[in-house]
Structure formats: C-alpha cells, structure tokens
Image (cartoon, rainbow, N blue to C red; front, side):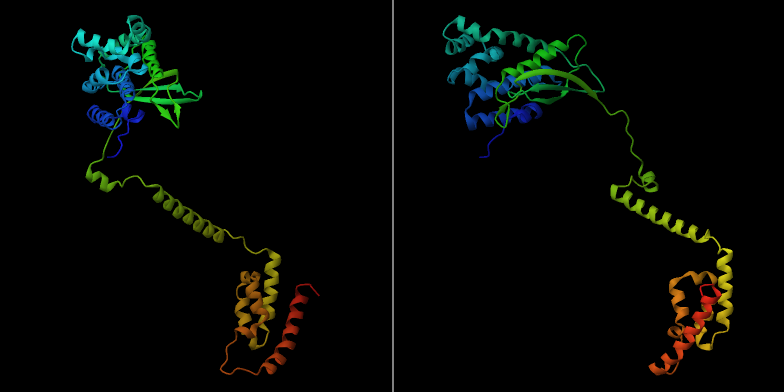
Length: 334
C-alpha cells in the first residue's frame, strides 16, 4: 500500500473530508500516536483562523490514542485540547491517571496549554463576516537554524481591529509542534509577524460568440513576435524605397564627366556596342560592375561564330589601350 503523506501541505491545504480520511489511513500505517496528536492540534489552529470548519476531527482515533497508546510527553503536553472528545468526567479522569503520576505533574505539563485552549475555543466561536473578499494570513516564521520563511494560510477569517494580538498568539501555538520539518530542519520554531491580505475579482467580462468572431482573442507571444517581424520588414522596405526616391542627382562635375564618356563611346567601333548602352545611363557609370563591362565590351557581345582566341586578343589589346588612354585624358588623369 502506498504511504499516506501527512505534512504541512496536507494539514493546511486539504478539504475536511479528504483530510480526515488521510489521517486515518496514516495512523493505520504508522501507529505514530504523537504525530497524529500534533496534526490534530494543527487542525485546531486552522479551525480557529479559517472560514471552513475543522473542529472535532477524527475523534475515534484521538480517543483510542489517549486510552490505549503508550504515554509520552507529547500526549501529556497536548491532552487538554481534547478534553471534550471524551463523553464524561470519569473517562477524562482515566486519561489523566494514565498520563500523569499526580495532579502536580498534570498542572506542570498543561499550564501553558490550558491558556492556548481557551484562546482557540474563543477564536473558533467567532463567525466569519459575509464579504466579497477572501482573506489570507501571510506570516513569517524562523526555523531552528534561524532562517526566515513565509507561510500562507488561505481563506481565513477577517482579523478584527484591535484583535491582531490574539491572531498572533494563535500562530505562536505552531511553535509548540515538532512534526513540520524541511530537510530535517524543524519549521515554526519562532514566530515573527503576520499580515492579513484580502483579494477579490474586481471586474469580469466575457465577449459574446458573435463579438469573439469579429474581434479575435489577444495574440499569443508567438503571434506578437510574428507581427513584429512583419512590421519591421515593411519598415525596411519602405525605408529602402524612400532612399531610392530621395537619391540626390549627380553633381555638375560628375555630369560633365558622363557627357564626355558618352561622346567618346559614341565614336567607338561597333564591337563596343554594349558600351553604348552603358553610356545611355549616366547614373550607372558609377557602378563598378557596369564599368567593368564598359572596359571589356567584348564579353557581352554575341556572335554566331566564336573567334579564335589569338585573333580576338590581338584586336582587343590595341583598341582597349587606345580608348582607355583617351578616357583618362578627358578626365584629366594623364
């Protein structure tokens, strides 16, 4: 059978019916009387502070423990919390005689516990006021190593003005328990402070089906990222178009040089036909790629006969040197 876990999360988080079933299962597995008794004390604390009812939990097991289990200090220290679990005074006296040697020992063990019992009964009798808010107790404790940690008890009663000290005293009862541990370190070793936090749904709305079709739901993070990428692409495209539109015209010096090149290329032999088309676009004269085509016009010329390489080279070299020299001269570079 799987072990029934009974820790802080279960004791302060489970609903009454499920929790009571869990405690019974836990005791049947472990027969650990001290653990069950301290869990019952923790539930008395939860009952005193919470809106829900956690009073008089698993009375049969409590009665069985105090009437049959081997006495120990844990049972002695917390016995007075469960006096009303026994039907009459005679049965209660039987418990006292099993746990204590005499009345002096009884009073010594239960002096502080009797005060806590009165406080728990008083707070348990308080009824939660009707409210649209939910109240949570957020408290800070120290463990046995002195490290602070935060613990929250959900759905608690509203703390009345001037009675904050009583709530703090109820929380201090947790420091008398030893069952709550984390990595071998006992929790609730020292109470520090608490605050009552309220929360509620202030407003709520859901669109009609027709409205939802017209107005799609909020984009997921992935959708938002795709939209952002598309927006950036549109901005880049727009910027590139604007740059082309707003491109500055050639200055006067560049225009004069282009006119000279145009006039020169008009007088070139026919095998420089591709250069003429190059000269028709003055702006293109600034492109290194097109300039290379102008310098090597034979590369773009098509012919039905592939000339001999030696013949082609002998024709190109003189012509190329001649018009390159002319261009440099016109540009003032010679």
